[in-house]
Image (cartoon, rainbow, N blue to C red; front, side, top):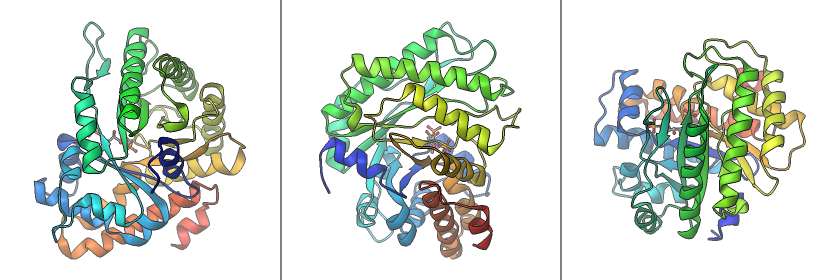
Length: 341
Ligand code: 5MM
């Protein structure tokens, strides 16, 4: 596989392919396992993720890269093969989450700034050696009638830009993820409020990326869709598609090769339908695809249930979601295809 940043970025958003976000930190994966009554241990986390990465048909056809947590990047499959090699054998790039999480922003109640820049240059060198060719940093932006404050927007955008520049220096493609949360505070915001805040945040992020001399050709943007809050959900698929595309066209330079959405708490079928609607109805200068965590994994996690005898069922569930999202990435998903399967 090519090692040029722009080639890796282009391959990450190749037609009909997208990213599997499997980089849940220890606390988050425990919460996910709690929902199926499974214990979160080093080996159960390995077994679960190995199940996904060995779903060969889905991986080869629809997954261009997998975002990993530090532990997984270093882990070996049950037969001793490094998980990184399992991912590579499926033709996908291993990626690494390098942020240290969203921490309370001093002086700004309810808002966060993502930490993790200290020592990042050295960590990136190590991650490159371990096989990572792209990385992810997630900024979390609170939304309400009065939030976010400019300080939270600016400081998160600056951190994203510093992170992205360090990644490119290390030969690693940065996924730049500014997430305006759907859950929000309190989560009853309208789709138009989400559009206003998303446009503000993306404009600020691209200003900072420019100032930091980040090459836009060698990055991937991972934004939220423009959508109403989780306690206010009423916008149609077409309205979400239209307002999301309009917002991205107003803010994302054409030099960016691709945009890979987060699902942000949408259910899996909604996340697929929204992506497909955008690709089906609009001409855009960049690829639009998925970088879903929950929306790709929910069905597989439930089918697996923490039991070795359910691995094949978990892989079938994951394969189906990956296929549906692969179709969405080319605008060819339909409810009929979803039901037929
Ligand atoms: C997979 O979840 C990622 C890591 O979350 P934590 O740091 O909280 O453990 C998360 O960053 C994820 O990559 C994005 O939010 C997209 O995932 P969703 O579930 O929103 O598609």
